[in-house]
Amino acid sequence: MSKISVIDSPWTQEMIEVTSNLYRLGWDERNGGNVSYLLREEEVSPYVDLANVTRTIAIPFDAASLVGKYFIVTGSGKYFKNVAKAPADNLGLIRVTADGSAVELLWGFEDGGVPTSELPSHFMSHISRLTVDPEHRVIMHTHATHLIAMSFTQELDERSFTRKIWQMCSESLVVMPDGIGIIPWLVPGTLEIGKATAEKFKETRLVLWPHHGMYGSGKDMDEVFGLIETAEKSAEIYTYVQAQGGAKQTITDSELVALAASFQVVPKVGYLE
Ligand code: 13P
Ligand code: ZN
Image 1 (tube, protein in one colour):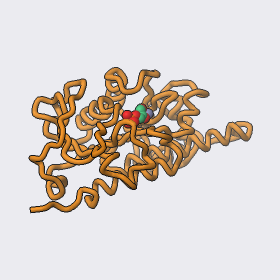
Image 2: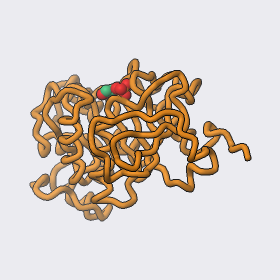
Image 3: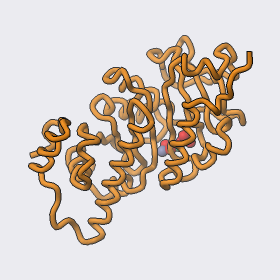
């Protein structure tokens, strides 16, 4: 029995929509950025023959705790601007092999592509987030412009960086009470950067890679995209405020405390005075 086209699946459409938006916002130049989306077998099976493995691709780390799991991921070296017009070249549907040492390609990467070079960070981050949030499904990496700029001009201290982001938009604290984790500058694509990112994801849903970009996590595309765009909006406002000569006043800590109480969120302990 022939299956419905993968391109018509809601999860492929969500990948197309989010990569197009990330490109439209100017955050993912060239092949910048990558997205991975954990899928349930029942979401995948109407669209793909689960026994038809096109290729098996080795991965350089042990993904034992993700055995049998399905992900749709962006390809390495692929441009987000091209995903909508050629999803089957730029996206791939993969399943982790029984021994956790490789992924099986079930659809996509039709021009010979492979999953993002950041697969170690994505997989390690999924593992990490699933331990704290069973609903977790999406990891998103993007080169959000103003956040990157702030990583050059501001102290790379999680508390002080988060406070600046919270102070720039009244919504920031409500959206990201867990704040922003920051890792040291590390070589992209390595296991080392994957481990550092995953460690931070145990405590927060946003991790800044200084001088590189942002990592976000969440239970669906909207949650992750919303987190990153709110942080980026705050960073953009911060940039304008500095360009206009610096803040004359800001949202005070007691106002932030009142905001948190009203929206019933718990700000990261120790971040407010
Ligand atoms: P990929 O093209 O391999 O996904 O890499 C892009 C990137 O942003 C690396 O950090
Ligand atoms: Zn990157």
